[in-house]
Structures are given as C-alpha cells and as structure tokens.
Image 1 (cartoon, rainbow, N blue to C red):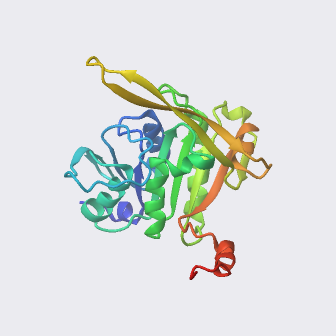
Image 2: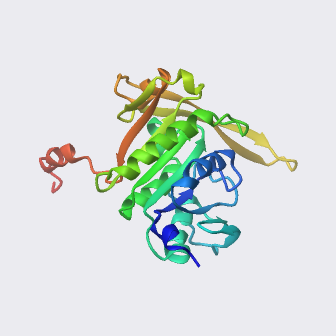
Length: 262
C-alpha cells in the first residue's frame, strides 16, 4: 500500500531513446528519484533517430524490470513515443505531473531535434499538457562522464517543478561535454539553423548484393549569439523552449495573397 506521504509526491515519468540500460538514463534516474514517485518506460534497445514514429504493424510489449515503493521500471519493444503512450494508457492510466527524457548520448541541438527520439517523447508530453523536458549531453560514448549533466539537469528540473511552463511549451536542454567547473552557466536560446550534409556508403554483402549505410556531417547555417549552437560552443548549457505547433504564422498572410485559383 502506498503511504499518504508517497501519494503526495509528484508522479514523474522518465524515458529515453538510447534504451533501458543506457548510462544517460541511469544518470537521470539518480537525479530525479529523490523528487517524486518515479515510473520509467524506456525502449528495450537503442531507438536513436526514430523521431516521432509510432508502432502500428506489429504488437507492442511491456516488461516490468523492477518495482519497489515509489519506483517502477518497464522496458518496451516500441519507440520513445510508443513508450509514452503506453505509460499514459496502460501503466499510469493518467497523465504524470512531469515528463523527462534523456539524458541522451549526443546532441539534440539545432535541426537534430527533428530526428530525435528523445525529443519526440517530450513532444508527446507537451501535447498532453504535461510539463516536459529533454536532456542531451554532447558526447556519444557509452562511458561518458555525466557528472556535469546531472548537476545541471537537477537544477533545471527543480526550477520547472517550482514554476509552470507555458501551455504547449517543452524544453530542449543540451549540455556541453566539459567538466562542471568549466560550464559558464545556462542560456535561454533559439534553435540554430543547420543541416546534415549526407551521403551513403555503398557496400556489398557476402552474396554480392549492394547495401547502403547513411553517413554525414552536421553543418551550421547562419550564426547568432542567441542560438543553442553558439551557447554550447562557448560552454553554456542551452535551453530552447519548443512549441509543437509547426505553423509559420507570418507566412499565412503572405500566402493569402497568392492566387491558387488559376
């Protein structure tokens, strides 16, 4: 039976896109566990780059991994977005008080947010009216040091819990990979312009059939001291407030002047 003291604590849902065993997720759990009742629903394998994809053509499964007072972990064969939907409808049967995704191994700054499974889960939260935050560390290594990321994640989470995010707004937080003592602070930023210069590495399988491996390098487009890329380059934690409404409102009036009837 859950004590009244435990019931009074906020219900916090955690996920990621690197999988249930990822060290970034484990670091985030350490930060958040003292702050409320914790439910983790995370993919059973890496799902980086899945963006907001959902599963419709094969069954979804849940596996309970660990359960104790005020804390439970599940893994799923679905995407990060699937994990949030399963949490809402099957496990919690309600919306959580806070949703946190990460800590991602690698950047989700600039245009990378479009491809991010980490941030797709955050959008799921925002669309449901749940305060939601995504955290990413600018280091892909599985043995990355998350000390600085944990410090700043804790500060940001506690501030969000004490305030109220604007409706429909979620936070995309990126953390430079430097010692905590070298981080200069936190900056509220806009998303930098950028693109991926992509190509395919063409290879042959043992039967001589061609297969293709996507590769590319990130290229920043434009600049500005108010962007997330600038902040990260200068050793600041970047916070970009993000709205899932993709409408370009200034373009509406311009397009209304066009003649689509001829």
